[in-house]
Image 1 (cartoon, one colour):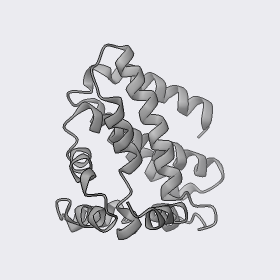
Image 2 (cartoon, rainbow, N blue to C red):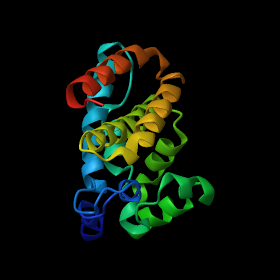
Image 3 (tube, one colour):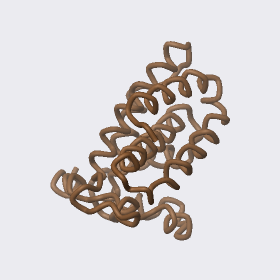
Image 4 (cartoon, one colour):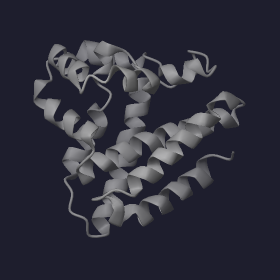
Length: 186
């Protein structure tokens, strides 16, 4: 693993924030985002397990921790561009190879495909983290992020309707409502 390259994520600001007027000095870093995604994933996976769902917590945490690691090589590519690039994971695979992390290519592919409960929980957590951060910025007066709050919320709703996470959606929605109520006021 090339820890030096990966550590650069601590200083790589998320591009979407800067495109909406968040100054680089204030913009959330990729590493900060990944940390929050891992914590949210831990909480949501634990709640689903308490509800009787069988899932691999280790896989969830590794996926959450590594879901944006390829950005240490590719940079933070905004969603608009990712949709248009449509390279079926080639960039991420090459980036993981460059970072000497080939053993995780399968997990990142699983995350991107979103077919397992583990990958869906991490995808939901990714959107939750983005939504909460957008709401924090909104509260600070950055109104240009409102579309991110709405877009993330819509993405979460769509993911919660899919199998195999659908059965756990009520408990996830409940926790999400609690987080939105206690940490943000839009």
